[in-house]
Image (cartoon, rainbow, N blue to C red; front, top):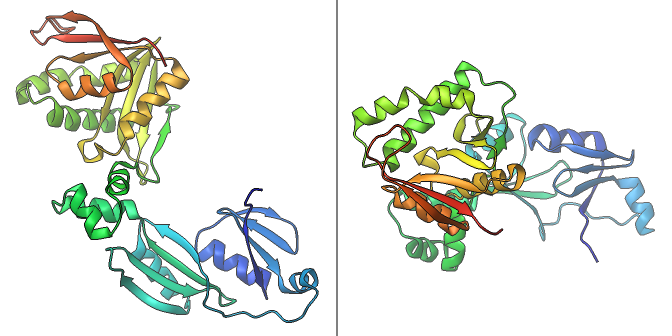
Length: 306
């Protein structure tokens, strides 16, 4: 048996459709006349047809024994939108004991809807205040493994694309990501050395055969990868997004889609080596000089097995 959807009976289908699409931002995926299906496995059914299905006219609206639950990245914006549409609230924004802010309100047929902050955002907020994973688990009353999963989960609106055009604006944005990443992770380089290497980055971004960009919720690049044949030429993430499994998703993407089998990392960047080793890459060669002949040893790794 497979769960398909939750069905809500409504007295005015057009009004309910407007509410769920215009206020909550949902999309109609199927329209059967007396029934419409929304993304998120929710269906709206006209009251007359619902009564005919039940073989009764006794249908009660307005109970408070259940609700639809959603999460959002911007609870305050939703609260303002509810106010603008004069939506009746069950209660305004409150904070639960585990630190998550939520708001509850009625749809036009008195079905209760709850919208809360994403639990990943709640966990990251606590982490940003200096709390450890164990402290976050205790604060949110969740298992330690769950706290770790929340902290390592990628943003909901993270996306990976292969840009159709490498515009000057895109090259500039990716170069900025590169500089922020290298400044954070390549601590063995001086500021002057980073400046010198940065001169070559735009050309590398323009010339690499395959360029993949990772974008955040606002559509701005937060990371990128470059592939030539079966070799990963580059993979960088903005330091604000480290520890969210985005690097793993980018690496998995280039391995699965482009057949990446090789990569080269600086020996002086042990975290990068550990990252690729964890993904199944093994060192097969070492060079005492980097590709520009500078005394920065390189490690060449190959992925032996999937």
